[in-house]
Image (cartoon, rainbow, N blue to C red):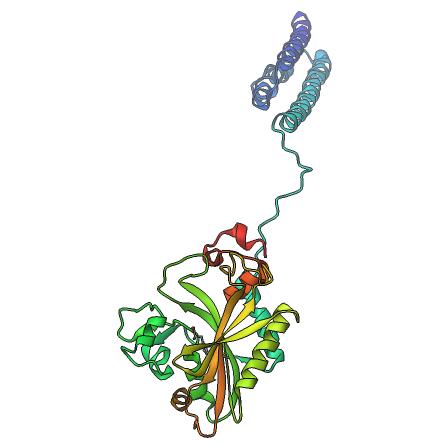
Length: 347
Ligand code: PHE
């Protein structure tokens, strides 16, 4: 009997001790440890359960009931403490770590077409309306197509007009202009008439400055057929410039020299930065050169497979980065391929 009473006292002491210990706990690791000590297999409450069968029969239910109450009580407090600790950790992480989950996310950088591509596509659109088809040709060319078939023989002084990137392979170069595409297209279509544009990158081994780059895009125009005149060339170019820049734009043709056209000319556009008054963009002249052009040289027609007695044609080559510079007021051509995202993002 005494022993039974003792056990009830012991149970009460166990409970008190356990709850006191629980009071001091504020981390989940300590809490788990507490659970092992006070509710685990070898905990004191569990020991009491083991001792009950050895007790006096009449006392067993009383003891069992009391032990159960203590155990349930401890479990209840354990759950409450766990809840409390988790809540505290959450509050702590919200206030201490200052993570504002309501802030909008960071948007990924969105890609877009390069300014040069945008301008090229605009030119394709305009020239398509005027009846020109895109014809692609290679960037790595032979000396034969880039020069010889365009009426520029080896050692001819006109070669100095293009500072060339040569490769280690004899006779293989990076094209210095899109004109070699004229020969490829003529070989494909002769003796049918052609009206095409040849777009793409060209390469020149040049000193770089605000208006010179070692690589840039050109668009070549080529029309070959019967009775094509210089008037057709002029009318086509003026119409193109009007559609590209608006009807108020003034242009002029200046006589020039290219080995593959005769006669040859260059077209200037009145500087849109200063309306012709003279500024840094046009080097004080009021005019900006935008393209070279002329009537296809009879030798080139022949090299392409056309009879120059029956056929004539015109050709023009424009630097499209220059066109972008005029349209958007870009003052340094080196920006185009410098790969600076801050520049490219503006367009
Ligand atoms: N190919 C010449 C150049 O790059 C431009 C041009 C093309 C001139 C067609 C006349 C005719 O300088």
